[in-house]
Length: 248
Image (cartoon, rainbow, N blue to C red; front, side, top):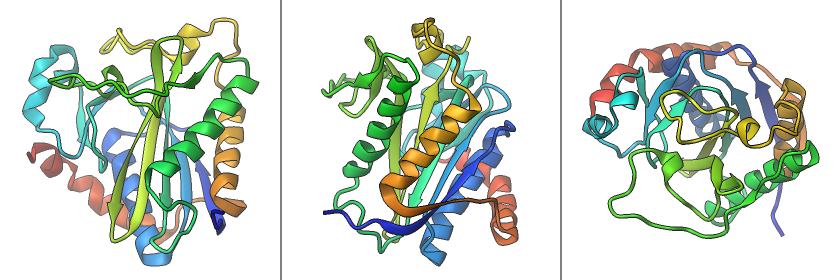
């Protein structure tokens, strides 16, 4: 049986932020997991359409998609393909190195995606786990054009995918829930495009999803905000984003 963590911080930010700031905050959460054995779940939004490169992607790959190449670009900590962040909610979950919630990193996909599927279904959205991985060669530039068994799909369309990063034993997982298609990636409709019968994804629904996910990894959920130390570190990491984008 999994051993839940004592506590998970829950941070929900309805105010959209820039891509560089969002990536800096995600990395700050991973550092908090390493240095303070802290578990945190954060849900957040983006203030403009932004492309995030997977950690191992080269910047030159964006030239294969002119629409995406014209967007502001950041680099994520996790691998995978490029994501166009626009009309969406994004989550970031970090677990400390000493956790016993999962024995294999992929088990965290099952926990998080299972709670998201259950919560969205309860809200009237028709969603399921894909259940099958399909590899293409070469793999598409855009992450939402790739097919993984853990994907959350509505009909045949991927509406949520996740990726991970490990550092010093701590684990970061984040994912994007597309609400509506972006003009820079119109081939990927969002969950609200595909489910006109359902109500819009509200802040209260995101809060319920956040609470459900947190309960899947910890005995107690605490609504929280940023420490001054975390904000200071995030400020430094934000300034480093241009260099990271140019790498690889």
